[in-house]
Image 1: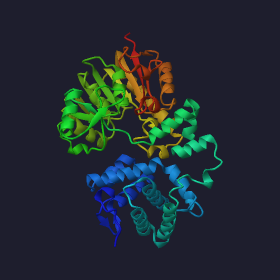
Image 2: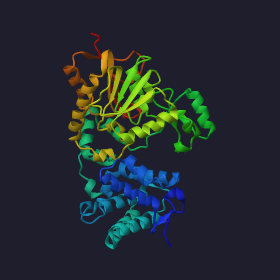
Image 3: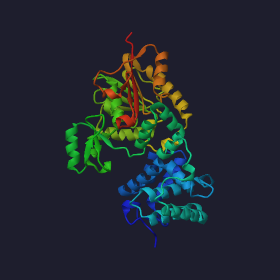
Image 4: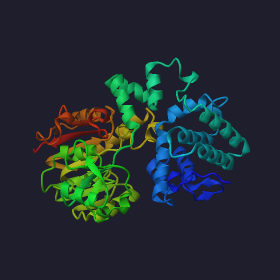
Length: 455
């Protein structure tokens, strides 16, 4: 008898050589991540053939494994003779996925988690790997009450311990602890290890109308933080199956991103360039008041996904342009938004793979790109116009330092806070927007509103 989870919602009963398609997809996603792919793209590609419930199961397994990777590794290190370093990276990921199912997915019977992981190890790495996986996972199952990593976790300094328990790279935890202290850093790590809500932005109707429409179709919503007209979806919803989505009555955007566009305070009727625009949420927010939004991105694939949303929303004043933000041939306009590429440390709850991919050297690399884009963007702002620089990073090198250097090199620009009441007062810091996850309950975001002199 081939063990299965007993339910399509628990890992798929569609079998491929004794292993559920959902688990094959999960292992393939982990391999894609090791090859440099981003999690969202890998999930879309590998889980595209699964039904909605199985796709959701794969997402829960992979995202959860990545969020708890440091703890899973410490737990495994005590139970793999010679440590994880001697194992093939793919086999290590199979073990991580198996342990996560055993310890954190109550919908998965232990026998299924073990048998399926063992079979997966056998088919990808041979009989020896399967025997190792069987021994390790059975030991984990026997010792499941002792989820605290033992010898390797003792004697750690406070930063090491926090990095382990919060499952983040130590160098990042050390930076954050120095900036905010241990308690706030712990709160940030805890938040990063929770599932981010799906927040909807009404389009073409008011919040109350959207709420009534959604609840009429069985979608439960609640208030979103920071933005009074946002709606957070309660539970899990397949957007493609929601009539209001197909009708173009909303788009998805975290409140922090919404606040960036509100902080920008673009004047009604303005012509706006949104550099690095995809996936497009900020362009759509700007389009509420602007006469024209020229949304630019250098990725044809990302622009094509944005084009689909432009058509779905019938956003007729949003024009898409394929161009590199550093080499545009556009004319000067009333306002330019630079949503700069960054390390994304404010969005780790949505992108748990990013914490393990990030290196401290990336701060310098992204900083150089940000400076180049800012210089190019400045030339696109007419006299008296606005330049808004934003990131989803928490790191000062990508935020305050960039603004300080830009203003020093461009004396014709000055920091100009938005009108009072534009955004919650708690998110304004020295005239700049600063949304901090553990304080505001949303993704991290930074923005600076820079006015070019009229003369």
